[in-house]
Length: 271
Image (cartoon, rainbow, N blue to C red):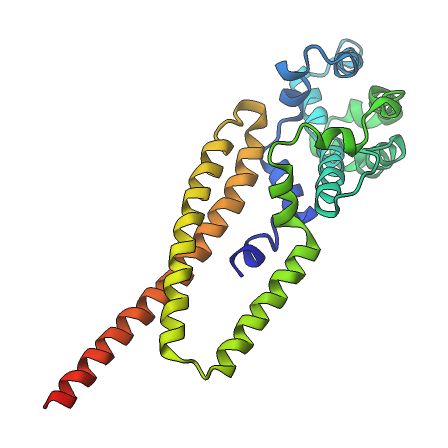
């Protein structure tokens, strides 16, 4: 139940999009030291410089052009790539990580909004030039971008991530939750059984807490331009802890209440 509730929203596109838009700097990612030896990214960096050449023609501040690189166009592109990888992990399937048609659609669909947000007339009046440069940035690169199968090889803890995000696993866990509930009804809420189950669940939660600490330590390794991954991992981790605290609080209250009632009953009998 804890896993079901915790993973309900964390792998949804809406949540991933919110996190990327809030915490990701596309410029920092593109110029990350991690990609210094990646020929594709290095070439993309060169093409991005072409966008900055417009400032010499249109007298536009480079900081305003930075807003285009960090705009919804590039962030939606990153969301699309992220969701392709996430869905590939969830379903244990393989697919192209991205394609040029997706990117061109994102550019065409968002360019007016982006230019309106920047609100510089000279850029609005030269929209076609901006669009051409933006589309050229990734042109001829998507054919060389790896399949999700290649990406998954480098994901640490792939099997664990697949387990907690897979929809089939979620359905199985829901069925097990229902079976447990029905079992409790059939045994007519036998107090001794409930007490045993409560103690087992509390012990299991203790193991979960150790896992939470390990996951938190792992998340702290993502710093600088990759810190958005830390936010996503910690959201999931904190959600698990939140539900663990709620369930354990109820279980502890149940055990304490039972002991108080049992003690009162014994005292009444002795009288």
